[in-house]
Length: 62
Image (cartoon, rainbow, N blue to C red):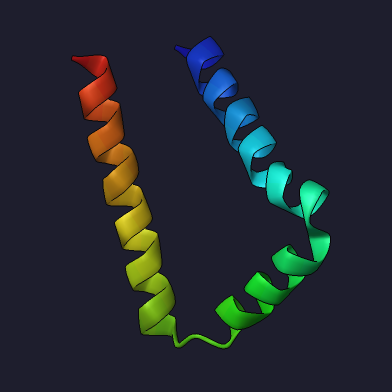
């Protein structure tokens, strides 16, 4: 179980690092725009991301 958790964390770090590595200016601009959103909008994005991940996990695990 711990091995799978570390593997998932490693893959998340790799995926998160692709955009700033390939296009740092776009990443900076996107990050700046995100910081200008309200707390409610950021929470909605987080909730949507978690639900999409949960659905993908359920789909893959079947």
